[in-house]
Image 1 (cartoon, rainbow, N blue to C red):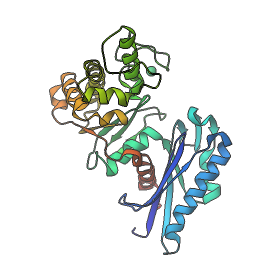
Image 2 (tube, rainbow, N blue to C red):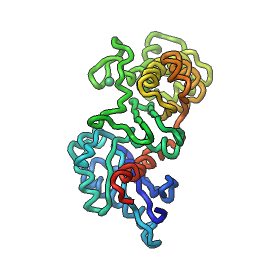
Image 3 (cartoon, rainbow, N blue to C red):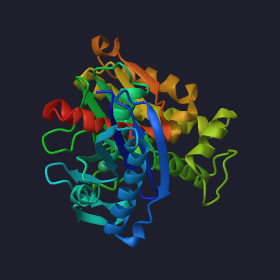
Image 4 (cartoon, rainbow, N blue to C red):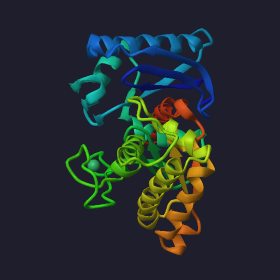
Length: 321
Ligand SMILES: [Zn+2]
């Protein structure tokens, strides 16, 4: 067992991050290069393959070997064929990524959605370590989710599980990119917080926040930490809606841990106090009594750490190691 390693790759719209890890999830080598998505899928696959070859070289001379590669993609994967069906940030449709990478590297390659691998990474080596049933919610431009049940990633009947951002919380709420109204994503994401701030600014609410074009969620969090009333109200409102979403998740899945990731999670107690309060107010006591709601720990490493775990998760069935 100890002469094997795994490689995890986190393919993003801007950067490709990757690492060589030991079978306990310890990071041996890390790499990061620009994606250069404009060059097209085959060129991007070539860059990933180059990174894999470099990472593999770190163990090749020692007589040890790499058991496989896991890769998280920002879109919809088809696990059975190894294709990326749709990845809007990369302008990809039906890209046979696994086939490309197998041809270049000769290694087994496992494909998964990026929010799912982030959840698996946090469960393996981050804030969800030791957790059997864990849900991760990532608050960014949108809201991503991943579910780990009985220690394994749960992806549902056709891979669509974990889309927590599109749970409808307020049926008459703001329009969502998915075509519905009042999805969690429209009420709690960084984008939603900025929208709430702009609406208040347009109403003439007194605040330290400026009307500048480049207003970001981090500005709202910083203003809230400095005691700005409007910014505090926005964080409280985001926590209120997210609390309803988490309450539903707690009732349905009875997780022991919920990990909150993404830039907004760095707001600390300002977010977590109202979030935990609202989540507990919206679930049954029995399920609510056991769950911990905690910030993510791995930051940008979560994607490639979880991607690497895919190799071990699948191999428990296929017994390659
Ligand atoms: Zn939606």
